[in-house]
Length: 613
Ligand code: M6R
Image (cartoon, rainbow, N blue to C red; front, side, top):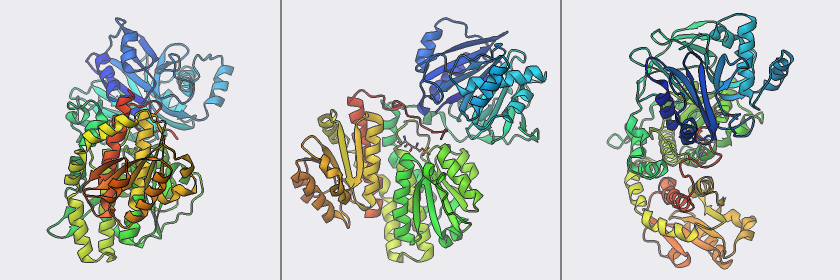
C-alpha cells in the first residue's frame, strides 16, 4: 500500500527521498511523487513507477534540504498524475502525503466547498490538506496545531507528513492505524518512512509513532511528540536490528527467488533457541507466559489474511492434532464484522508477516475489547500488531520484499509447529516418545527444504510446459490442503493465471466438472495417512484426461505411474509436510510468472502490506 518517506536536515533531500521510495516499491503502488522545500515548495508527481517519476522530473528543480515523497496505491480516484501525492492546499502553502482513508471526506469536502475551496483531484487527501489550511488561516495557529485540530475532525486511518512554506524545514507527522517510523540521525537530521527499510542505511535509532500521536520535526532540535488531545509524549527511541544487506537482491534476479532460497536459513532462524533437542523441550519465549491461558482457553481463534490465513489453517490442524485444544481460523476481514462470540476465556492469535494488515489489526482490537487474550505471530519487529498484542512470537524470517509471501509462510508454520508441540507436551496430549520424534523431525526440516530446492531445474522445465495455461487446479488433503490453497494463491498473484485450491476429496462435489485435457491439476500426494485416498482422487482426475503434476515423497512409485510429471521431495512426518511441499509450488509459480514476463516482485494491483480495509 502507499509508501511514505520524508527527510529534513542538512543534506540534499531529493536522493534520500528517491532511494526511500525505491525501497518502498515492494509495498505495491501505481503513482509516485515528491515535494521539496526551497524558499517555497517544488512539486513533482506522476502516474507510474519511481523510475517514471525520475524521468518525468528530468533536469527539473530538485534542490532542498527538506522534502516528502509518496508512492500511492489508489483508493479514492484512479491512478493518474492529478490523484498522485503529494497534495497541496488551495493557496499552495501546505503540502501533504497520506497513507490511509479519510472516511468522512465527503462531508468535510462539501463544507470546504461551501467556504470557497476548489478541488482538483478525486482524493480524500486533498480534502485533509485543505482542512488544515482552513484551520491554520482561520485560527492563525502553527502548522502542527492546525494539523492537531484537523485530525480531531476527521474519521478514518492515516499516516501523514506535512510541510508548509510558512515553516520551512519543519515536517509534521501524525498517525492513526497506518504505520510511520521516524529515524533520528546523528546530527538530529530526521528520516521518516512507512517502515524502517528506507531509514536503516542512515540511522538505527528510530521512534515508532503510536496511534493518535503527532510529531513536530525540526532539524537540529529534539523530536517533539504530543497527542491529538495535546498531551506531551516522551519519544521512545529503539534500535533497529535490520541489516542493509537484507534489503538487497544479492545476485538473484528477483527478491521472490532470493526469499524462496533463503528458507533453509529462515526456518532455522525461526527454530533457533526455541527447540532444545538435548533437554527435549520447546521454549517459545513470547508465548510461554500465556501457556496456561492457551491450555485453558475455551477456544483459540486464529485471525489472518491471505498466505498468513493459510498458515493459520496449518496451525489449526497442528494445535488440534497435538494439543487437543479447539481452534478456529477466521479471515480477519470477516471476523471483525460478523459479531463473533468472544469472551475473556478466548485466546485470539493474529498471524501477519507485516504486522500492519488493517483487517487483522482491527480483528485483534475487537477481540481485545471483548476481554480475550491477544497474541501475535509477526515477522516485522516493532510492527503495529506486535505492539498491540499482549504477547507473541516473531518468526525471524528477515525482511520479505517480494509481494508474494514465501519464506514468511514457512516461518509462520514453523512457529505454529513449535507452539503446538509446546502445548501438547505441557498438556500431556502427546506421548513423550512421539514428542521427541517430532522435535527431531522438525529440526531436520531446514535440510529437507534445501533438498526440495534442488527440484528447481525440473520445476523450471515443467513450468515451460504450462506457462500458457489459463486455469490450474491444486489438490491436497489433510495438512496438504492448505498447501494446495497456498500454491494456487502464489500462481494467481504473480502469473495472473486463474487457479483454485481444493481439498482433493471435495473435487467431485463440483470442480471435477472443469477437468479436461486442458486442465493442469497439481496434486500434493506425499506419503501420509491419506496417501491412498489421494491416489484415488488422482485416478478420478486421470479418468477425465486431466494433466497431472504430482508432488510426491522421494522413492514413490505408485503416483509416478499415473502422473504426467512428478516432483519428488524428502519424506517428513505428515505434520511437517507443508514446510517442504510448499517449496516446489513456490518455484512453479515463480518460473511460470518469469516466463510470462510478469512483474514477479511487484504484481499488478497488489500491495505487500494492506493497510486499508
Ligand atoms: O502481512 P500479512 O501477512 O498480514 O499479509 C497478509 C496478506 O496480505 C498476504 O499474505 C498476501 O496474501 C500475500 N500477497 C500472499 O502472497
